[in-house]
Image 1 (cartoon, rainbow, N blue to C red):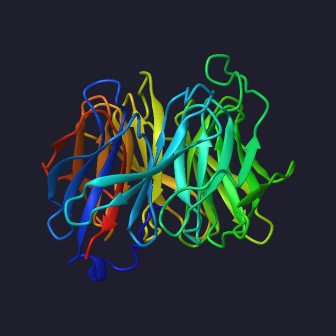
Image 2 (spheres, one colour; image 1 turned 90 degrees about the horizontal axis):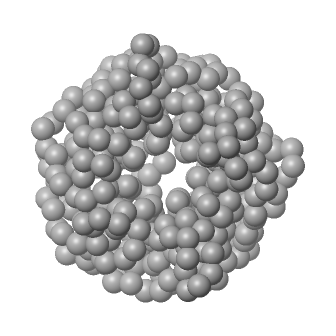
Length: 372
């Protein structure tokens, strides 16, 4: 679920892109870094620091590619128990970012941000705050104050990680009528009615997908056909598939399967999940095993079958993105401080290393924006 369209490989293959990397700034990193990306060759060219800002862990790009929005994953913002959301204007020639404004995220440690399908609002998940919020985006790119807010309550069975709600991911459905939230602390995918005109969320006590106790849902990916959705579960290192009823916004579980190879007994936490735009393959990242698990998808039933696990050639793959033409997968290895480019075999789904890593301190999230 990228911020740009990937409709056809031939259409996108000749275009030029910027790639932005959000990072954690507790070490060497200063903020958001930029790269030029050649879709034909898969080559990344570093452009350096695009903007200095604190813990810009997750990013999103407006549909026209003019503005970038980052969560600032902190627990104290101007003396309140909140993180922040920062708006930037993109210099499409240099990759530099100019700050427009910054607003409180309405909860501590915001960890995900995405546009709705109209491009008029961004939706934010606050991890430690256990809440979600919606912010209007003005025509000049600046953010308004929150138009929607929901505070989650409850806990899960894992006393270390689920002592309270932990909203970890939020996006709207393809028709923009609902917003789905993965809450790691509650073991639920919560479904809200979303009003694009007002930017409001309406909770429902009955519309949710339930995960195994202690599973810890982290991120979600939709199948292009709109009939299936998949949750990657951080604490159990599993993926749970659901059938999705677009009319009512309801989820019914189909299958839960491991992201790890048989026999692995080490410590692992899953992180990111994406369905390939061709609908044939699903990818998920393992932190600990340091691999991308690749699954085939049965387009009729939605069920997954593990193809293989592929080394990320780095440590702690927190995020990965599929490039705009669907031919490559780029992994952000947080603890080894590199981005590694893999070619995707579009017939088998297997990943082939291109030997083109670039260094960046503590990368967390990658986002493309087309510049021609």
